[in-house]
Image 1 (tube, rainbow, N blue to C red):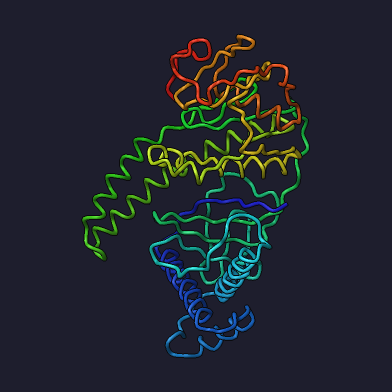
Image 2 (cartoon, rainbow, N blue to C red):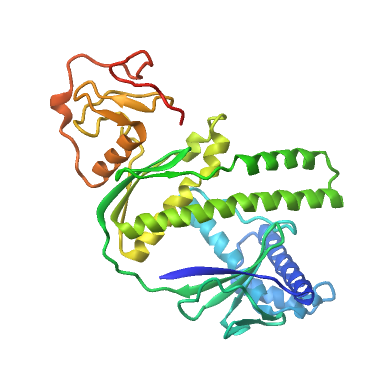
Length: 394
C-alpha cells in the first residue's frame, strides 16, 4: 500500500525565489486550462490540454513557462483532468461519499504545491535534487521505507515549506493484546473506550480566541494592503498551531488503539447535522472526529486489523450495557445513570462505548424480558432520582 511521508525544509533565498516562480507557473497553467474547460462545449482531455500548453510556451504572453521544469506543469493538467473525472463520477453515483463540486481557480494566498515525478527529482543520501530548483536539505525526522515514486513541494498559507514523498509500505502483522474495543467520541472527553480508558481532548480555546480576535482585526483592514496580508499570515499560523496539535494527538491515539486491539468499532456520527447547533458547532469542528476515523481505518489496513462502524441509529446511549434495559433518551447534561432494572451505576460515555463494542461485534442483549408493560418517558428528567445521579459537565 502507498503512504505519504512529509518533511519540512528551509530553502535558501535563491531557492525561495525559484519556488515562487514555479508555484506561479503551476497556478497559471491550472487557471488557464480551467478557463478553457469552462468555455468548451465538450470537456477536453489531458492530451488536448497538454498540446495547448506546448503552444502557449511559444507565445510571447506565456514564454516564461519554459523557465521552470515542465514536469510540474504537466502534473497540474493531470490533476485537473482527475478533478473533473471525480466530479462527473460523483454526480453519476459512481464515486462514493458526498457530492464533489467542480474544480476552482487557484489563488496566490492559498496553499501552493508542485509535484515532481521520477524524471524530475533525484534522492542522493540526505539531499533531494529538484529540476531547475537545486539541492534541498529537508529535516529527516524518520527514514523513508522505500524509494519514492514522486515528491510534492508544498508551501502553506503561513509560509512553511514541506516535501511530501509517495512511497510503498509493507503491511505490519503484529499480535494484538485485546480482541476488540468500542469507542464513543465526545468533546471534553474525546474518546471513551470500552476498556475503561479515556482520552482527554487538547484545549484549543486559547488559540481559537486569538484567531477570532485577529479575524475581527482583518475585517477592519483595507483589502490589498500590507497590514492585511500580515494579519492573514498571523491567522494562518494560529490555524496551523491548532492543526498540528490536533494531528499529533490523533496520530498518537489512533496508533495506540490500532496496535493494541484486533477489532476497532466506532459509531457513525452525523457531524454535518451536529454542527447545525450554533452553541456546539465551533467546538465540534475543532475535534476532528472524521479525521480520527480515517486514521483508524487506514492504520487498521496497515496493521492487519478489522475496522467496523456502527449505525448512527443504534440507541447506544439509551440501553444499559449490563442487563439490556432501554431507559429512553437522555439530555446531554445527564452524565451518570442508575439503571432501574439492575440498579447498576453507569457513566454515560462508558456505557455507550460498551454498547458500541457489543453491537459492532454482533453481540446484543435479549432485552425483551427486561421491558415492562408501562412505558418510560422518552427523555429522562433531572428530578428522577431512581434513574439519574448528579449531572456532570461534558
